[in-house]
Length: 296
Image 1 (cartoon, one colour):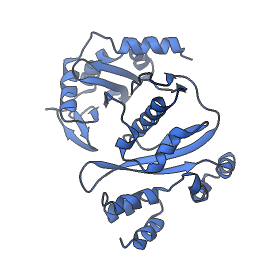
Image 2: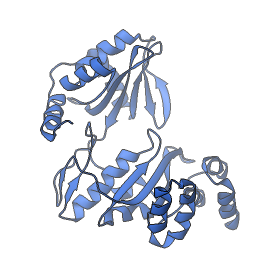
Image 3: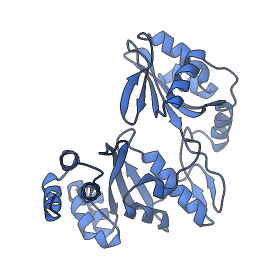
Image 4: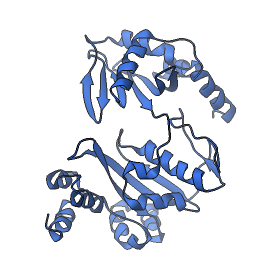
């Protein structure tokens, strides 16, 4: 197991490197200039960036695996280079003067190098800036328990978690422990102290979220929250996960809400079309009933 000292040393070394790849810097400059979220480097394809969920090519020709490896390897921390050479996959943080911080994942696909580089925000967002359902904020007030935040890649999980930690940090004098490698958001010690290697013993809540293209441009978040009570714990112990959905209704007074309720609210606010909401729903009939009850 890697010690906290080793992780700290790796973080420092990854953010104070003097080596720099010219092609990588040029790609990242375009990523930042267009306010993109990810740089994608795939063999036999041109370099591409993701902007609000849509991919756009920025390269002039397809890349080879060797070119990708040569461009990205200099940006990896020493420990990450060793991991890549040994296991074929590695994660590392990377800071570029004038551009910001990035998270790099270098891996091999069918024996050829490929990479994903994510731009990391320079400031931790406030929870109300994320436009999440109001009930999500209650997670920052929990006194104990493990909260699981799930969702597909790019759905905003890390941003939500960072905003919740920031909410606690601004309000309470606590000892906050997170597990991240590499670190994406850099919290400053405010009222709380943040370190890096502990997990709560009990499950308190489960949040799942997704980002959906909105009617007014950009993407809007939809979410589902289960505040875990006795019934949910019993279902989890028995591996009867199909019953967890009904627990949301049972624990609604504690703050739980379904994905369908979140989607319906977006339709009522005219942030999402009825058709798009229905296609995203896990229980389309429930959503249809909610929408019809309000004349949508």
